[in-house]
Length: 196
Image (cartoon, rainbow, N blue to C red; front, side, top):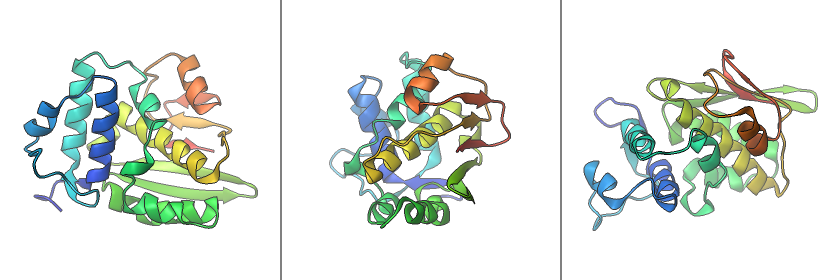
């Protein structure tokens, strides 16, 4: 851990930075502003403060990021910047096994994110349990949920569609944007962020 502040894997930072950079919402000076030197790139397994992720989100918002930026970027998650947990999950024999790995080891990716997986017959409910400071940052929460759906689709080779999605926060964009990305109705003001 870094200075007792919540930490995450550098893969999250690098993936977010690369995605924002493609949309011209991030620039190399942003990483330098975090104290990262271009001549010493981070390894994907390195730990970084979660505050660095929030700083990139903040800069993107200041540069005019669309309201649904978290949803959109989550669907662009790259296979090349997967961290250790996502790499282990990608080697799972089944989606169920991958979900078990994510639920047990998600704090390795980010100490501010946990998953709870509940099985109800053929259905699975995934609750995203965010803690401060991520819990108070809706675009990051939408990014995590959208990323999980993207990775599930990549790993299974199937366009998985949740039956229902709920977020704790108020909507950031039009309902049509949520339906286009997630493929299902979305509720807001829920006690937990979840997909079913």
